[in-house]
Length: 129
Image 1 (tube, rainbow, N blue to C red):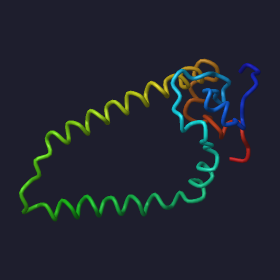
Image 2 (image 1 turned 30 degrees about the vertical axis):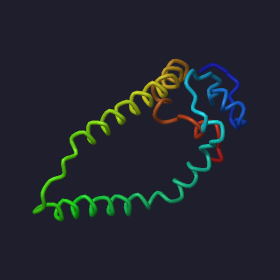
Image 3 (image 1 turned 135 degrees about the vertical axis):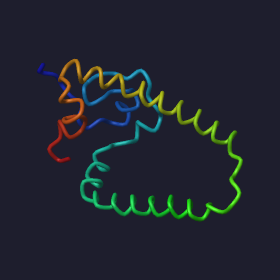
Image 4 (image 1 turned 90 degrees about the vertical axis):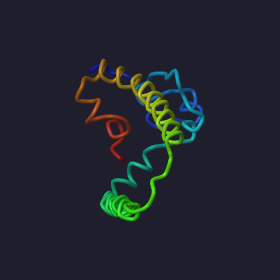
């Protein structure tokens, strides 16, 4: 592993300019990224991971409840709306994939495959998270 300087506590200016934890520059940066620090969210989800089970339970009850509710009712004609939804979802996924590929390729090249899925992001460089 090479010895590199890493940006741990990014300022809003650095984050908005596309500087990453790995000292690389992004080509695609969204405006909200300049004010976002993920460490607080990582800590919150670490402390409240059990909420996931309640959310999954509520989701399952909603899906099966609505399925039972709609069983004897006429179907909705949503072909055009679902087409638009699928196009929007495909574009969002394409953008997300392209946005993630840049960092994935850099981390894979410099730190190896293990670092891409086990030691990524803030957890690798900050013992506080």
